[in-house]
Length: 117
Image 1 (cartoon, rainbow, N blue to C red):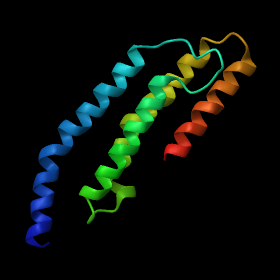
Image 2: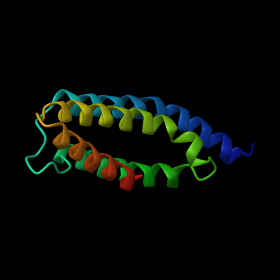
Image 3: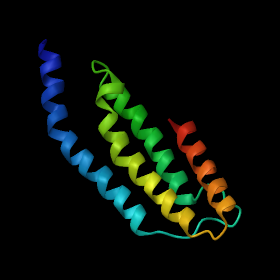
Image 4: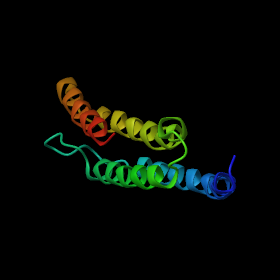
């Protein structure tokens, strides 16, 4: 391991745990502010904003860790953001009375998440 790789590893270990904690706190905050789905069954504002933030985080994270394969090192970030977002979508869908509306809402949200990734 070169000196620069060692430095990156040290820096990474100093910021990664607080970074993960922040992501988890933000995800939990979004879930705690549960609201009914939009009447048109579109992607809710909170999910849209979270996915926009995730997209920005992914680009910054990828640029900062050029020596690490993103698919291996970014999995924890996705776990901390995507899993709570899917939980949020499920809880919001349950607020809809019609099964068809629930399914349409879920598909709209899942498509948005997939397009972000």
